[in-house]
Length: 102
Image (tube, rainbow, N blue to C red):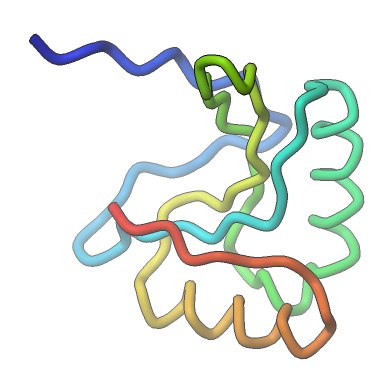
């Protein structure tokens, strides 16, 4: 029997549904505190706006069992090439970024 994923946390931006090949996301950070995650998400959206382009950030709630609940700063669904391009640019700025597969 498959366990249900916990619902995503409320976000300050609304992720658009995936269309066509837009199923990848970029993850910039993860925080155990929802308030801090929201604050940092807003800061990152502004700071990296030129690299993010149309990608909007939101919080994704992740229950990691014994490690606790974390709030991941992720983009809305984007193409794989866009995700890799964004992460490459963020890496050059020494910012954290991983490509999240569908």
